Length: 288
Image 1 (cartoon, rainbow, N blue to C red):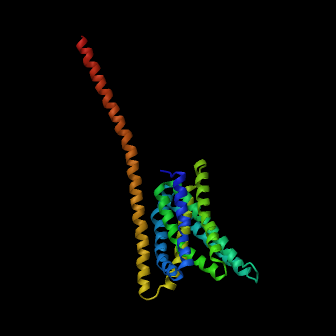
Image 2 (image 1 turned 120 degrees about the vertical axis):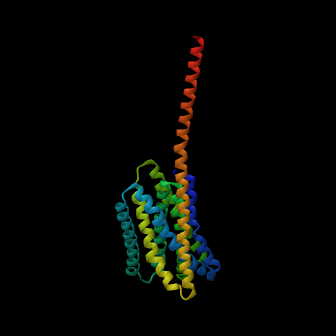
């Protein structure tokens, strides 16, 4: 079942704007925000990995071959690596004293582009079915919270005022909605390579979890906190895994209902026709 426009709008708002909760908390209660990021990061890593391996790749593999899906996933991983590599290269090669700090501009542009890609992933997932869209949105929202806390913190260090930081990030977060609605609207009118898009998204999720989130977990989690981080990562995996399983069971149930109802209707029609024929034969015998 493909989603409606309003479902895509609502969940893309959740995936984009909900992530600002962590950043807004940073502006008011700094210590609490960093504690939240410490706990959300391992959960987000687990959620991204589970979404990639339990939902996106299996969905893509149903539409194209498994080998093709894995190749597209690898492409997604490489694309995200190159994008991140370019942004780092640009940052290091364009640092110079200026009234307008290029680092801040780069953070804003990079975050906006990242959110646009998140939106494209959400829109493509909802073109497959609603449950896949929801699972993708949950994974994206989870990993965006610690990322936004980091971005808010960097902009604060660079001297941005709190109100400006908030408005800039609201604009950036809305790029998620733009990406989701564009790909959804275009996909409704044209045949998009949805399987390939899902597989590329899976590769991006794996890259973000393995390259960005998990190393930060190793770096920040020491002693007892490291055990909690492992537990939270597993909770993220299990949560999205259970959500995916429930969603797919619901899809199968809907398919079964759609198949059974026409069959039952045809059987009833056939029975009614037979009964009518028998009545007609009885009437003919009585007339003789």
